[in-house]
Image (cartoon, rainbow, N blue to C red; front, side, top):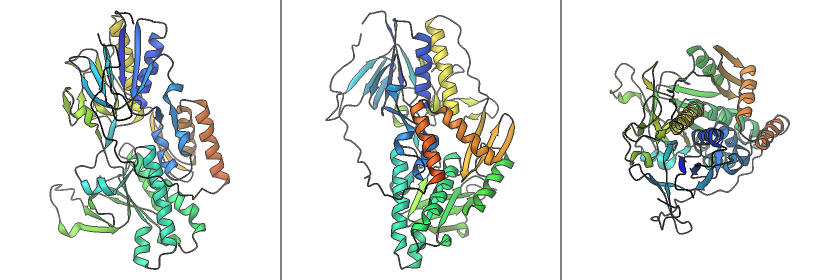
Length: 452
């Protein structure tokens, strides 16, 4: 390798990391002096907006994962988990294990796009007992759990236990929570005909939201429409309600006092008998960021207007792990793929400007719109300044998200899944996946990369 070759390392294979890599490949496709390296824990991009549809059995699991190697062209790809980042030595270390060599990568420029993980706000019992909706494994586990509960409830003679088996609680009234609730209810109603001992009134799907309204990113009228439609569909929504604990059998909840948020009124503490809680109520940056040498606020890397880390020139942070305040609200942007991709493009352009000694551009964001599906053939959308709801919004959601899937073969497969769902019943086979135990971690064995 030429000594004067510059290496750009991108950490994270999500929407932000992959978008940044693709943009950098465009800028430097014919430049032999620039080497682009992408590091991701998985060798695929997970199309997270469609996870609820995997959980409901509408879409096949493999159809929302796109192998990274089929998307990138010039970049060198490493599959591995980040152990630590040394911004002074300009080195990134990847974990080694019994079956995998540890790797040290040197960089000249760095883009951190490591995303986020589920935030349980210190409630260890929820972390242990609740299901999540963050990974492909999570979606499959949720689907298996729903089918397992149906199988148990079908032959259960104790009416109280039967009711708790068929009660599903979703914590969080944002995009993920609402779309998950809608898909779960669709699945339950679609397959109920195969369970003759389960009546419609036995099924209960409840959404708990701590805020006074669901879907905080939408206009009040659109969020209200969504709430009405979900209620019509049989989904119960409890606003200003927080979960305090879940032991696997009972969800303890408390009604929040809007006037005095710190006050706990014992009369407002109640419980829901349920075996299944799905947590979608918040995210937090990954521990690699929290324990790094970068300056952070609430776990996120502090960046300037150009998305650059002030004390380390040439290091950029984008997506969920970067703290960038919306100048209109003076609050951090929502952790959405749309914002992550917009930041990734600006970071790539600014890296190109730095290397070519041009002027960098500040990050500015204008929302293109927001969409959510809230049940069978019903959606809501805020698009080009218009509020749309119902069947039209549902069609718009499908078209927009289908177009955003990066490879044509996966688009076609998802389209076929949607077409099959309109013609046939959903599959109620329970795939026996086990919860994976965390792999034991080892120190870096040696340096694989040539460090100079």
